[in-house]
Image (tube, rainbow, N blue to C red):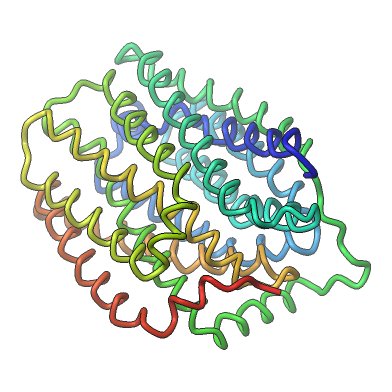
Length: 395
């Protein structure tokens, strides 16, 4: 990746891999086509995330030892397979198979894309461009996801709910072609076994307080962001927003994410990790609390606050961890961060399913906002010693 053409290939991959046309309507698909209740859909997503979490670390080590590019290609092909399986014979059984494919796909991609970008820029002597490139990659991905959301919701016409899954399968195949063009870091013939890479990554996490603090920040950001994501569609339905407009709400959020991510490298330089963590706490606490209080269709505008959060955490957590991680275990350590965050999210989703069944959508949103504030306060109390180290570069 020795210039703009190679960065362009990476951005193209991010754009196409994020064209999941079914994202704004998957809750509706599972409810109307498969016949699942809201709590059951949440528990199905909890299964997805638990599986993804279990696979994060071994597949991150596989990317470090075997091929980061290969893992990215396999990831998007699994997404295509899962979408086609689901629309071929929609049922609870095929929903489990599809979510298994989606969870495995995310685990394959997790850490591998950022590690590939970081090391390729470092090899080309362009490491100073990494924070900006990471932010732009997340922005391009968000724009792709937002565009796909609008198209996906419109192509349903309110009833053709299978069409977004077909479109997602096609986009994923295009993403596989883009991923195949990405540069591959040469692996030494004496590359350590995956088990050793995992042990090394765990050792780095145990020794470096900044790594542990960054992982804790990832837990806070990932869980609070996905409370928005998984409750967004039931919330929109509860306030009277039509299904054909779901994609526009999703796209608006992604536009905010893209705009924020594109300038995150400047915000990082001005705020630093501690202040950025505070902002990542206040945004979801205010947004989720607002959604709990507003019952008018205009409450859909509050979902845009998720875009601010995602525009910060998606690039910044990768920047912080890449600065701390040794090259040989970079993807493994990024996957460890994601593993812990996804395990926490899986548990949170199971609790969300119980909460929605017991106290409804708005009560659940209010509790989530309060929990976000408490977790952010604990993180702030631990930040004084750990967070500044996230500014240092790994060797």
